[in-house]
Length: 249
Image 1: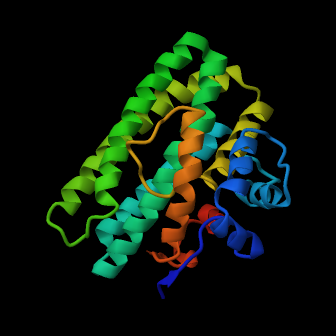
Image 2 (image 1 turned 60 degrees about the vertical axis):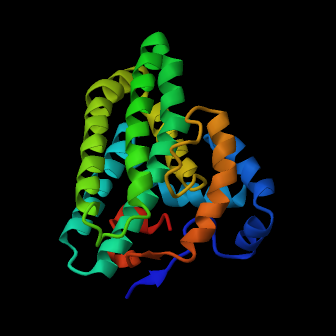
Image 3 (image 1 turned 180 degrees about the vertical axis):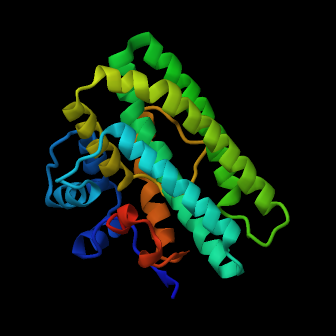
């Protein structure tokens, strides 16, 4: 049965404080997301749930797992037979893709620029251009009814743009970055990537900056509003989601 889900911080007194005073704790969390060691109990809880301690993922594995989930969500939209089901899977795709893109821009792309120098900067410039096309598609899709005749063509265009970007990341970005990182460094970057997703906006904002630290500040302003909207949004049941994303709610 479809239900409303709080997707973000733990649903306790901290969540109430987060909603009533959105910027104070959120600003600190956005500063800390690049650090490998969580500095608060909430960050520790997120880190424990974001990655399996017995089999930590590398950054390539974490990114690839997300890409697989995004394809699954798009397929669910296409295969669903009711407007209600199509809508909740559209919401799930929006939620996951918006968080994924911003987290890459805040964690993986700075790492590429740091470790690959000028080559990394050129690669991430291409990545950000590709992200912009995806964000603009998603911005239109996230509020468009699946009953609209333009919905399916727009979904197809979004996924085409996304797959072009995925091809660039898997063939150009990831091999070069992984070559410069030890496995432990790659795993630490993956943890930062997963933690960051917990504090990013959950909808597309294509007009927002796409580089640190301007993007950090834009996320700090947009995320509380997006997550409040999530309270009023229908999503798939937890049991319908891939195992990885069940612990991220």
